[in-house]
Length: 479
Image (cartoon, helix red, strand yellow):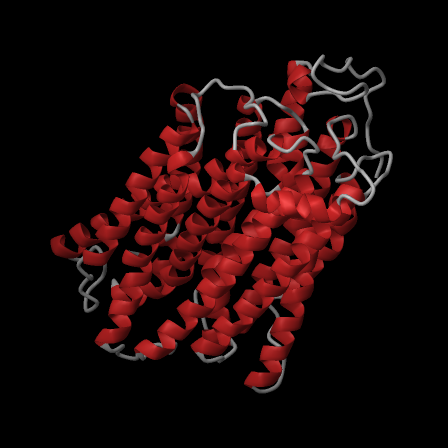
């Protein structure tokens, strides 16, 4: 693939080293190209993440026949391995020296194998439960390793392309806008193809489609951002500093706060995503075909929330956007605890009572999406501030540790969810009357548990040194 390069890059801004170009200083047309291309970078992986979050546990239990605890163990093992390789890839990415910069070779070189591996995640291998368990773990480990090779260098670029707080927020907004739009496509695809959650062939079709999209969107992203990425900031390299940099990651006060917020919000979101396709048909008694489509309001409202909180953050600041968004999220979680189930004997719209209950469910889902969009936007919009507090600005290393701890916490959360389902008496089979203990556990995973995690995230951020919406940089001396 031929990568375009600017023949005469603009001179470096006074606050940047010679030869480095801040994307904020580029002409408007080139900035727009970078924003659009950067938004494409998380489209394919965002669609895959959405499908995995909503459907993979169902695929393992309903189509592959694994017990809930074993499905949770697959997810936990794969996530733990994924977490282990994050610091390795982050360190290697920071140390990569090419004429294309440290990030582009990783993004472009991993695009095709990542698409192939992501498609294989939805293949049902022959054999018994333990054979399938081993194959699922192996495929997931390969796919997650390749995902890291694309997504981690890509994430680090948001801090390196520009020093402008507003442009960094717009880059992350573009990133997650592309991700959520692709997630919408994934939900539509699931609604069309996954009408029977016990049919393994339909899952493989979804996997192939998402694998192709991942490869294409990643290649387009790399091509579009290449001119800016080749001339943006790069991590400084000093011999013998790796151990010192690792120690500084642990002592960076801002990073610790961003990290705590990120992992708590994403654990809450991941638990809700995994529980959603159980909560809707089992607790709310929504027909299985409706359950796939009812996820659309969540994705639409999350997309709207990204635009809302991006604009809100420009005017009122990122912390104000976080507080308002999470307040909506917590309120919707508490609503999910008390929603009245539909009457399964008749259609969802066959009576006024059922229609009212369905409306309340959709409204709750819309509010959840508006609030949960802060989990996508705010932590990544705050991360560059933490990176700026480090004079060497090793963005790959900080991004790696951000994702590393997130994946460990999510793996434990998914393992907890699988075991909670097993202990509560939940059985993944159509037509089974679930015990009250299982219904309560599912409601808690959609309501009380994520609400508590979000509250803890706000507690972690109570001392963040944010000084307003238009602040362009914070001095490195601020902890």
